[in-house]
Image 1 (spheres, one colour):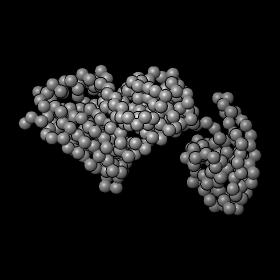
Image 2 (cartoon, rainbow, N blue to C red):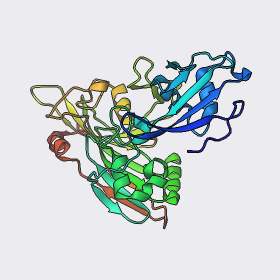
Image 3 (cartoon, rainbow, N blue to C red):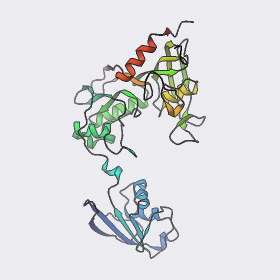
Image 4 (cartoon, rainbow, N blue to C red):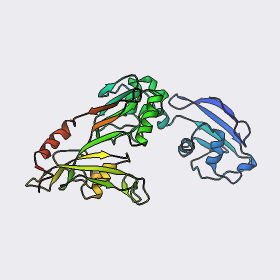
Amino acid sequence: MTQPEAQGLPEAEDDAVDTPSGEPHERRSVLLGREFHGGRLDKAVVSMAPEFSRNYLQTLIEQGHVQLNGRVVDKPSGKVQAGQEVILEIVPTPESRAFRAEPIALPIVFEDEHLMVIDKPPGMVVHPAAGNWSGTLLNGVLHHHPAAATLPRAGIVHRLDKDTSGLMVVGKTLAAVTALVRAIAARDVHREYIAIANGAVRGEPFTVDAPLGRDPQSRVRMAVLSQGRPARTDVTPLAVLEPGDGPALSAVRCKLHTGRTHQIRVHLASRGHPLVSDALYGGRPALGLARQALHAARLGFAHPDHGDWVWFDAPPPADLAAAWETVLGGVSATDS
């Protein structure tokens, strides 16, 4: 790894060293000039390694890979002084090791030289993240299509929640990825889901047009917020099951116009109908389901090569299929 010139810093000394696990990494050392006196540590470290992201370098500081005058420091906001020596160890983090091929079976329903359509099973994480640095859809895509390593996010242009099953499209070339990203941004991709909601959802189709953002009370949840990003979901009630031993359950079809995080889950919960077994948004368990009752059942888009529309359908997996048929056996949602 070659050290570029770091503006405002003397040329750094580079050393290749080994981690305790034997993985080689790089060590850089500089003496701070007056322009950094009284400034933040992470600002100085960014200048030492400008080819890396600020978040990555802040992570290295927090994990104890930066020394100041021979003493380990772990606060990116800590202040530095002119003349101090900063030693930076550029080590692989879980994030940097996550972009690796793994032999994971992918349920591919269509593939050509431009793209593939995958029927993601429930329980599979799409992108590596904290707690799931391996075993993800991305890792499987890299194994199946090694050239994906040259593409943004390995060609994955949209995602599904871990416990949501169903159809996803993955680009295999930069041209295909670019076209698919633009189509999604322009809302020119048809995405249709089936879901089972708590409560009785009856009547004509309706639209939930409510902006979404991160819940200020919980970082793992999304919420309807006036300052959130626009989000629109069309909901079609299909059937209502009113079991004698519990509250009503409803089968609905949802069409996305936008693709915000947890969009269907939050929009239906905001109307008092959280998805079955969606504990994050207050959905009661029912029908033996151990995950939220949501499946991406239909996907349509203009093929990025020839421009013709292509359509794909996927039935729900076994856990949701049985519950879905049970609710459909209830009363039509347009009755009463």
